[in-house]
Length: 113
Image 1 (cartoon, helix red, strand yellow):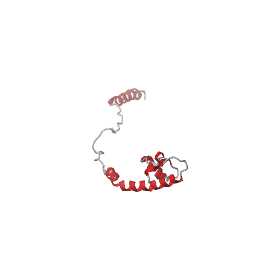
Image 2 (tube, one colour):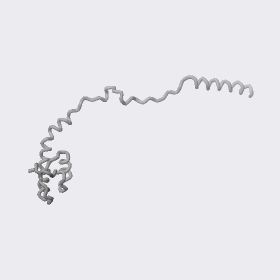
Image 3 (cartoon, helix red, strand yellow):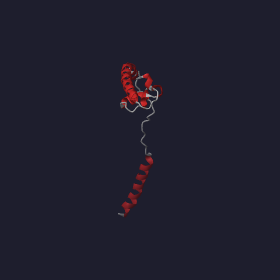
Image 4 (cartoon, helix red, strand yellow):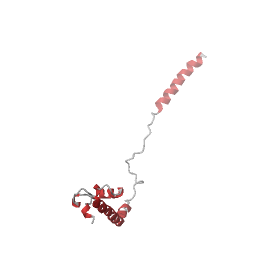
């Protein structure tokens, strides 16, 4: 038994040292997100710009509807300020979408006639 132990112990150390020295462990490398391979690059999408051109009629209708609300709110205003100095977005009687419309498109109460 002692003869086997004297023979096996150095043999096991030799095999273990060869296994450890054979190759270094490799780290996992992720794909570079900034590398442009061309597969995910699509041609420019111009449909949004075309949609914006087509939507001018809708914006005009929205402006007319919101101007009607602005005129109504201005007729109820008891502050005594001239309509030239009051933006439509300041009136609280407007529907929320009209308030947002007037924030994007600033309009004075006098312009809504």
